[in-house]
Length: 121
Length: 121
Length: 121
Length: 121
Picture 1: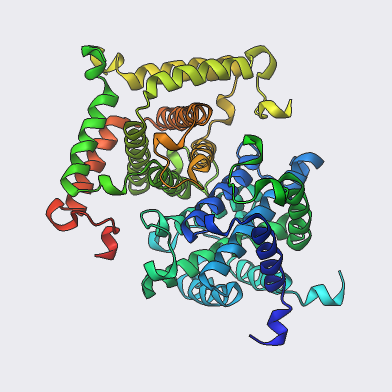
Picture 2: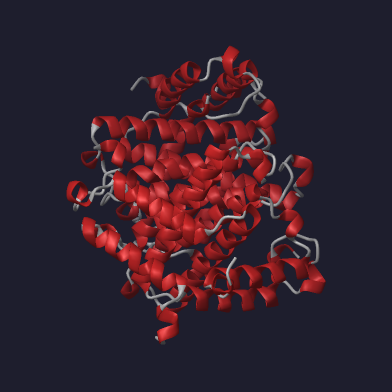
């Protein structure tokens, strides 16, 4: 890993989380299976804030709710970064790969303004 | 926003996703509500790979499955970054805030080796 | 258990699922933890059909999509009944109990037309 | 609908829920999209109880936790029955159909003791 990537956002997050986990001796619980379950739970807690709203745009969120939303988003990111750490996944590289696939699956000229899944075309 | 944060991982991801979305005219579907639902769906697709495994450690994943796992992780990150964009959330700052709360909720000396939720203590 | 409850919908479903599982020797995978993960995955697959739609009402679903929706609903029910079987939960009794709690948490005269969570009042 | 099915578990549940919703004027929030999001959230709350446990078997659950688990299962069932009501889905018939498909997808002699998804064979 280059010096540059050592200073990346994701590397910094990974280190902060590693310390938090080590101080609590929680690594024993952090199997990829458990982390992916926890990630799913946090994503659902985020969704819970929006489930009865029209759009969830900022004008529908009061300050207290917006803070909770930000914290649920943080939880999602923390578990994702932790899972990436346990599985040695480079998240930036994974997104690069996946976006390439998405560009091929959903050619702009074909899907413009249409939200169907590629298998429905 | 400083020049420095403009070059951060999250800003770069945000820009790549913005372009992808604009080319497809998909912004109209990207309400926070819809994005949080999509995030939840991707998190569950990630969990699906692990649900019948013992731990999900790398030695339980063959190459094809590991690639799918990486791509699901990418999808989670893409929707999270997109949601942060729509709600003007600084993900790094949100994690900083939330980790501070977690440190207070789960004091290391109290919770060491114990995975119960703080409300169960 | 009375003769009557033996003939209930839930008992019949439980028996059909037990046979399906036994024929495949899948009971070994059916821990409550794994089943609740599988339930969550199926619920998300159901949500996926609705995530970009306005309301998901029947007029927004074509026949193929509606069939998929019905089948995802079936999957949710199957895992729920299986989980109830493994934990000896009487689902009807659980709903009776929970509805009683809901009636107390959300008094009709107080919450009419308001979808906030009780903790937000 | 026959007199018999009118007295089925699912019909009774549907009626109890209809009354609860009508008393609160909550039908306006109950689009299939919103209900499937709520179902997903409840399924994740159920999973949350199991995420750090080994198996989630009853001997790992104390009485308080077991009660919460039962109530989350009730919530899942309530939203599923409500969604079925809004989309005119007969849940029993849907399970019959889906189990038939599952039997074809996963022939007992082929998958015995193997939890892979049919697409992985």
